[in-house]
Length: 415
Ligand code: SAH
Ligand code: SF4
Image (cartoon, rainbow, N blue to C red; front, side, top):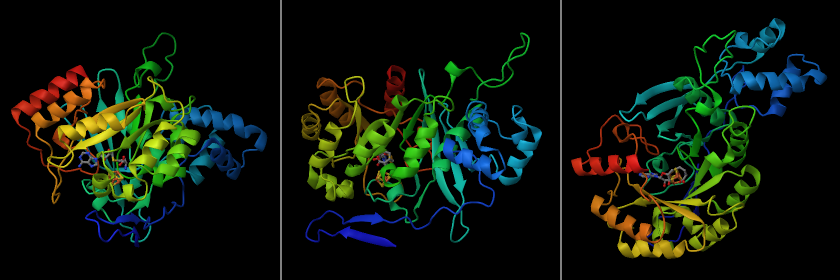
């Protein structure tokens, strides 16, 4: 079902179309424990007969096996009795989503296409998850929906009709799966001076940061995103602090305040235009929540300071939003908000009407932004050879000129 909520017949901008999720999650007969909250896990233990007074302690033990050690088998959980392990294995699994494809880029970026169960047709759904290694951190970009509820005109995901909200479990499972594939779990404690054979020490974790910038609009799947991120941030488990988790939204204004209060992670706003007229076209949700309301919500986001800024994303579209007048207006618009600006080279997809701005233009635009005091404004498109961008798992290698390649490499070094 596709519902048109605001028509605006006389304007050139497309109607704001909000797709309702077409499918619901169909739980498997044997659910996975991955992603359950501590309370749900305690209930699960109740189901297999663990007395109430023991549940807290057992949850604590299982939490450690799931999220510190990365156990993939109940038998690995040696602090639990064999009977309890057997009972859990009969009723639950430790299943991760199936990997439909894995790609490794020459710069170390990895991209996984994950297959999630469908409800209606048994046709599985696919979402993306991308790992981007950098010198001082490793960032995992995760998805919140199959497809997207919204329809930004420059975004490939927005063209997909099929939408299903991911569950909290599926959100957490992307982090778990990345740690599996990267061998990023804590090493088992060595006995009597023996060297640990697998896993790593806590401070050397590869996945150190999360960005919710894959498929989907996270603030249209609020509860699952909140519950999933709260598991990811749990200091006794996956332990990725909320300061290292960034949620990107196209501007679902009422849920920005909720994200601040109920999640408390860092915020990124997909701005992309400095006037309502243009933003109505690029991000049709702007017709529902215009720039003034969006920026007001940003100003009131809790905990903002120069050390905790909002990131404003700005995709560079040739001849559309990339003039120097746009750059100056951007700087003016964000005045007074502790902000970072990320200029994102547009990643083209088959059938799109947009082109990426010329490199010279991106440089000139970025100089204006830089002169206004914003550091390193161009987000390096890492993993370009596997197209690690929103909604675009393709095998074709995008052609960049030698000069662009050099410029990108230089920026990656100084980032
Ligand atoms: N729905 C959320 C998060 C996912 S999109 C949002 O819109 O913020 C993550 C980022 O990728 C957004 O800033 C989005 O505008 C940008 N993006 C989408 N398609 C793109 C493309 N083809 N090229 C470059 N950036 C793109
Ligand atoms: Fe959805 Fe974000 Fe793409 Fe817009 S840019 S269609 S909100 S994923």
